[in-house]
Length: 300
Ligand SMILES: O=C(O)CCC(=O)C(=O)O
Ligand SMILES: [Fe+2]
Image (cartoon, rainbow, N blue to C red):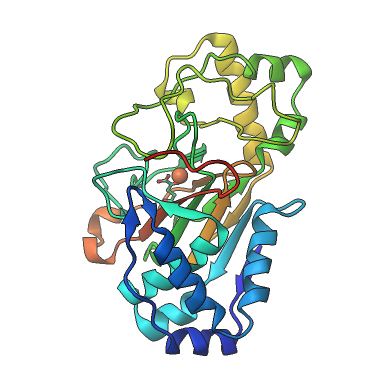
């Protein structure tokens, strides 16, 4: 679901500066949230825009949205004042937080030609996954703000609904995916996401069909040692995710928000030749995580 800002809203947002944000532990502070809400509420058509955004993320059949902030980005640049506006929109969805104590609220995802190509900031295919898959409380939303797209033209984002994918698998395969036999990655010094979840089941058998996190990352197929039967079930799910995927090329100023209980995300490979692109011109995203207000906010 793509959400454009009306020209009236854009003009009012350009006119309206927001104060710097403050954190309370790893979460955006209550006072910043109140200030940003008050700031946005003074602009025309904000209610329609925010309700369209919430509906795209949590309404029937929804699960992700691209909020098009490119007009604002072109007019004001993508420095701190622009990031405050993006943070204010994020705070209308849920509470922004940073699970990584050493990182700023918005974490850079650049392009590193020498890194594992399939991981964050690598240049290859970044397979379907949820972020912080191995935490007992993964972020409810993961968000990616595009500062620069791949100048060589690669790297579209991919999105897929794992509940729909699971429904196409056999009962037997789903039963295998419900076993706590999966693991991926490390877990070190993370805030606001609970404890390490290891091993984990992909499918939470206590959740209603179609609801809850589908704890999945296709990256574990190559990077974790899984039993043969568990790997085969995970591979079937990975294939169904690709079958049902949508692709979207983020432009500068596009803000992708993904409800992690509804959709998994990934990214296709960047165009080859990244070594020849100067670092300051390579694709750049900024990532921010959100925690639902519904449940108790975990202590940081
Ligand atoms: O590069 C992208 O578009 C996605 C990156 C990603 O999903 C991640 O770092 O978790
Ligand atoms: Fe991700």
